Length: 266
Ligand SMILES: [Ca+2]
Ligand SMILES: [Ca+2]
Ligand SMILES: [Ca+2]
Image 1 (cartoon, rainbow, N blue to C red):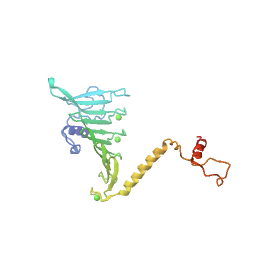
Image 2: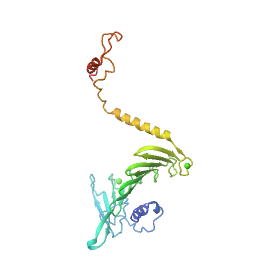
Image 3: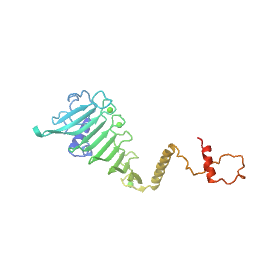
């Protein structure tokens, strides 16, 4: 676990993708015992690489609500003497203050975000992988089955959701595709034979989803306080009067409007 995660951070520094790092990383020889860095007394499952690296500087800070340092920043030390400077490479946080870091984010040497990994349900397993491009979210991979690997992939263009892929048959590969325009679902495709290509585009699914969204928005609006009736609308039920309806003169709009406040006293 440690070596894979160290590998991840190493690969970020080398601008190599995470997947290129799949196997055991023989180059990582710094898996020393935790506690080597001053001020870190226990293994908090750090994912930032810093142990036994003289070219790294570690800073621990205490965030709001925490009594002990729960935020760690790892800097690269570049240059010497006057030229010496430090660059933030990795920041990790124990957000629920249980002693284990659950969010880690890496940066490039321009200070732009590169990747973020998080254990959003605090079960000890990473379940959310975010990839940034130019400092903006480009991809979010989610493990929605606690399987240890992504089961849903979301792609963003210009900050807007453009595509979603889902693995619904649990083979680790996407079999449902959703295409979005301006954040709204346009098409949904299904791979039926497992060859990675869409075999059927479901318009019905899209319509059903659109209707569902519409219903939800209607439900939301019905939860809102009712709008007052238009002042010139006749009351839906004419106020009771002594005269039988058949003998009553045709109600004048002005009479209905005048009667409305009495009937609508609530
Ligand atoms: Ca935690
Ligand atoms: Ca988790
Ligand atoms: Ca197919």
